[in-house]
Amino acid sequence: MNPIVFIVRRLVTVLMLLVALAGGGVLGLAKMGVDLPPPLNTPRISAYLDDIGARAKRMKESLVGRLESYFLKHQEETHEEPRKVVVTSPKAMDVVITQPYVCQIHSRKHIEVRALDTGYLQQISMTEGQAVKEGQSLFKILPILYEAKYEAEKAKALLALRELNNTESLFKNQKMAIVSQNEVLLFQAKLAEAQAKVKQAEAELKFTDVTAPFDGIVDRQREQLGSLIKEGDILTTLSDNSVMWVYFNVPEKQYLEYMANRKQHEEEDKIELKLADGTIFPQPGKIGTIEGQFNNENGNIAFRADFPNPDRVLRHGQTGTILIHRPLKNALVIPQRATFELLDKRYVKVVGEDDVAHQKLITIKHELDDIFVINSGLGVNDKIVLEGVREVEVGRKVEYEFLQPEEALKNQKFHAE
Image 1: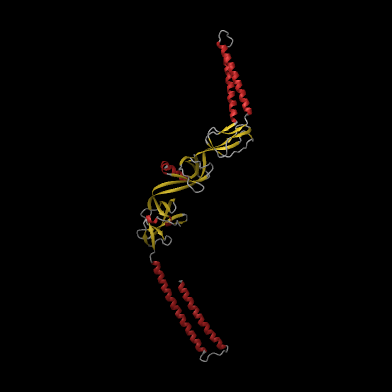
Image 2: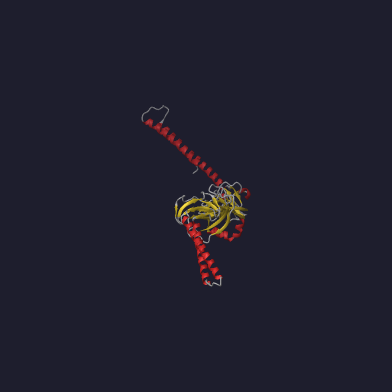
């Protein structure tokens, strides 16, 4: 029922009730013996009140009937009047999509520097966080025993050399014929053994001097000066941060898409690294490698992007987000607000050549800030409802204004429903 008709009915009913109460009050006073003004006549008053009630009832029915007829006719006219909406068309244009991936940042080389032998830590030649060069001494373990052994082996080697020289001299003197060829060979073997032991002692002595195997940055020191170090103890870590390896996981579907056009992606894709504070790392990256197998638990495969790190801003163990910017040529796009979702599927309302609205299922290929890249379901000549999507009834004619796609894609503020 129309609200205005309802209110009018209520007012008339209240008026009739007041009249009836007034009449009843007069009759009651008369029966109670209360003196009323002389002109009053109770039977005549009752008849008069009944007549007023009947007329009021007829007036109510007539007034309410006219109001209902008016508003019903007005509602029908309003319902039949076409609604004017704004429609536009999809647009084929070049766009750049951005795919983000959470990543882990690793140094190209990252090792644990360990002690090669047991002894007391005699010298520390580095400071935490220092950049060091290949071959630079980092730690020295007390080397007294190894130095003594090295000197002893050198002396034995020198003795073997002199014995060999003496034997060869006697062998060359054929007149005396004191030494045979076999004896010369025996002393040569003794000299070779002594020289081998010298090299072994020299290597053991070098074990007490722990040096950097490559250029890099050392981490904190794990042991203090004077500590008793055992073979295999970690003294520090060393990282080569000149180039950083950034690992991120890619779903199988996106991996297959990448591999189908790998050469094109390697040439056109722009790879950036967003750091934890939201800033973009200034150096661009490139895909370095793809791991050999998928993770069966999540269906992802690891990609590695390589980033030059000339200023050593990036450090081993950092986190961030890889942003892959991929250009798409002649992609079909529509504003997000022209779509709506129903049972996990995406639809638009399309106005046909007969100006009748139809609902159409679409599939989305990529989602940008305010637009969708369409995979299927629409063409460039389709007319889609942009404003008033919820008000347009499927199967009914609509009156519309056409907005050029270029204008429709400007200043988008509302996302899909």
